[in-house]
Amino acid sequence: MADTRQNGQKDAYSLILNAIDIGTYRPGDRLVESELAERFGVSRTPIREALQRLETQSLLARDGRSLIVASLDHNQMAELYVVRSELEGLAARLAARHATDEEVRLLKAMVEEDRARVGNPAALSRTNRRFHRQVHLASHNRYLVQQLDLVYRSMALMATTSLSAEGRSEIALAEHASIVDAIAAGDGDRAYSELKGHISRAFEARLRQDADKAAQNDGAAVD
Image 1 (tube, helix red, strand yellow):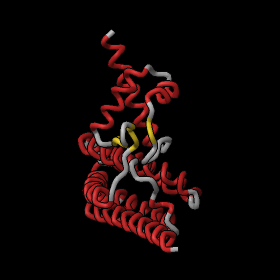
Image 2 (cartoon, rainbow, N blue to C red; image 1 turned 60 degrees about the vertical axis):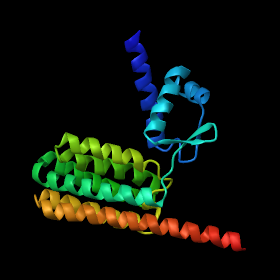
Image 3 (cartoon, rainbow, N blue to C red; image 1 turned 180 degrees about the vertical axis):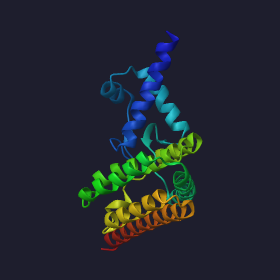
């Protein structure tokens, strides 16, 4: 009985976390026990325990008596990008040392496949994460991969993707290609620099999106 209960807790947690991760539930969305239990075919007790766990991890927040998917403020987003930049840069450096020929070919194929997705930010956002995770795995460092999984879990709390900024998808693909070239060449320093620069420009694009949105809201308020 205990094993069944633990499996139910794990499954409920994983199901809700994945739904947040893929954007089924977005920042600000309210999560209701009964609706989640019906949606996922899980009893309310493991759903309740999963929600409590997600709240403890700051992935959910209180809005009165309700639980909603949390969102990141400006400072939290900036802090997250600092950590992401350093960890991903390290992953690229290690990938340049340890990636197999097969892993390099896969990274190159991912870049080529994504060229057909330019102009589709939603599709590119999904494959972008796949590309970055493959770089993480190519580092062959399980502890680094675990930490980056936590970072990307928090990235799901951002309501938009920087790839939706005008012209960003084409630039991002060119940056991906440069990262892969450095990894393929075994140049750890260049791989580190290329990936850190890529993250920095993604953050800049996101900041511009937020600034433009704020300006539109201010204009609407004045009018």
